[in-house]
Image 1 (cartoon, rainbow, N blue to C red):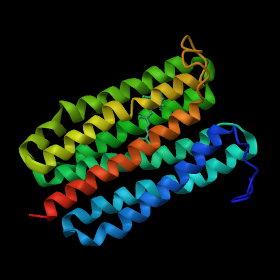
Image 2: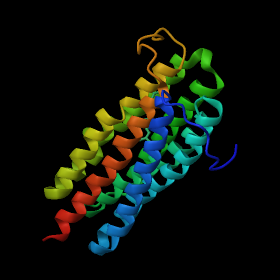
Image 3: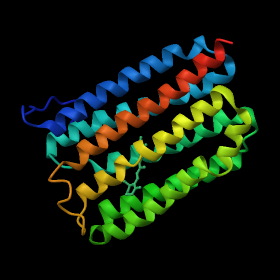
Length: 236
Ligand SMILES: *C/C=C(C)/C=C/C=C(C)/C=C/C1=C(C)CCCC1(C)C
């Protein structure tokens, strides 16, 4: 692969277009988070830094994925999952950081990280290694996803958020919605791109377009929720 080679883009290559726009959006978001970081109270700076790292790591991977797609018209599955396995655990760290004020323990963070890695490794196996059993790997991945959603919505994380109250509780709720609705976009992409009883359900909509939309919503949205929390808490 030629890094940053300018491949010819066909006007009807809507998948390539979403890779291109996704890349720019991630870059812009990173600049925004990094530059705003120092205007906040010290205790929020790490959270904003991590918001920026999430979009920055994605921006670099999108640079490669965009090129990969342009060169091969094929899903950059490997780069996709490397990106996720770095950024999704960082999102788990965000949950921990905002709940730290209410006394969240590191064990909560490690639990969420562990579950997210299980979710992603099983997803990768289903997409890239053992496609004939994609439904089974998807199911295992979905189970880990379910436990994450349960933990933050109803489990120990929820309790801490309620104890913290105010802006922290609000931010926690917003992040919970991102996980429940925003993250649910990914299993749809998976079903659109792997063989199974569900094949054809998505009318040929491309897996990568679904993943790219999910990434833009979740990575930038997550960061903005944390940004908003920092703004609200720094105003007082
Ligand atoms: C920035 C990237 C994010 C937030 C990626 C999130 C990815 C998921 C929530 C993926 C979930 C999957 C399932 C629940 C089942 C099918 C396999 C996956 C990995 C697509």
